[in-house]
Length: 418
Image (cartoon, rainbow, N blue to C red; front, side, top):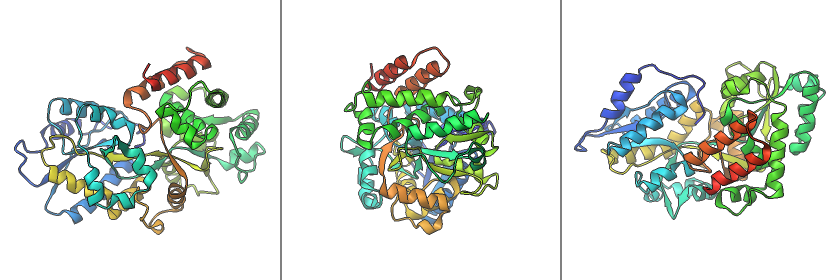
C-alpha cells in the first residue's frame, strides 16, 4: 500500500522468472502463485506473517511467492499487465481496492468473487459501507486483506511548542490549522512537509475530505458534486495556502523523507497515511509525547479508506489455490497477523482490538464509527489513468507551470474523462 522509499533490485531476475513461470500450464498441482510488490520492509513482514497463517490453514497447498520489487509497485504492475494480456495470469494478484480495479474489470481479466463473500461470511464481517465501496454493478472483484487511513496529520510537539502552539489543542478546521502553520513559519521552521507529486495529491485529497462533507466528497467521483462549486474552490484555495508552507525540496523527496522532517524536528506537520507511524516507531518515539497524530482538521468523522486486496484472475491456473489464499487473507487470523506486522488494521469488524497497539486500536474504532470514503491518491476513488492525469496536473501547478484555476479545471476534467 505505502510507497517504498527505495527501489529494491535484489533478486530481480529470479523474481521475473518466478512470475513468468509460476503455475502449471495444465492446472495440476496444489499450489498458489501470489503476485505482489511486497518485497521489503513492513510490507514483506506482513506477507510473511500472512503466509504463516496460510500454511497453518492450508498445509497441503504450496505458496509460490511471485513478488516483484521496485518502483513502488510500478514494476510489478507493468509485468502483471504483460502476463494478463498474454494469457499467463498468476493465481491471484495484489491491487488497491476500489476504482483502480476498473481497467482489469473492463478487460474481463478478473472474476466476480461475490459468492466468496457469502461463503467466507465476509458480508457479515466487513462493514456495509466498505462492501458498498467495493461493489461495481452488483459485483465484487477483490477481497481486502487490510485497511489503511489516509487523512492523518503527524506532528512534532516540540516544534509546535516552540512556535507557541499547544499540541493538545487540535485545530477545528483548515482555517484554524493555517493559523498554526503561520506561527511555525514565522518561527523560521518548515510548517508542513510534503514530498513528490503523489504526496501532494495525497494532501489535496485530505483537504477535500475536510472542506466537504462525506457525501459531497463521494460526489466528486460519481458526478453529483460539481468540481467548480464554491466548496471545492475553497478546498483548492486551501491547498494553495498549505503548499505555501511546504519545504522547497519537496519534489525530490518520497514520503519517508518528508515524514522524517517531522521526526527530526525540521518540520512541524506532515500529512500521510497511517503507515507513517512506522517512521516514528523506528526512532523509538512515544505517541503523545514525541509525536502526535490527528485526522486532517475538519475531517474528524471521515475515514479516508485505502486497502490492499486480492483478486481471482480469469484463467488462473490454480483457482482452488487462489480461493484458499483469498480465504486466508480475509480470515480473522490472517488479517490480524498481517496488520500487526504491516501497521494497518483489519477490514473485519470482529477483530480483537487488544491484539493491536494503541494507534491501531484508535483506527479500528474510527473505521467502525466514522463514514468511510475512498482515497484518491491510493487507487480507491479513480482508475489508474485518471489518477496519473491528476498527478501530472498537480505537478504542473506546484512547479509553476499552471495556475490554481487551471489545476481545478484539469482535475475535474480528468475525473469526468474529458
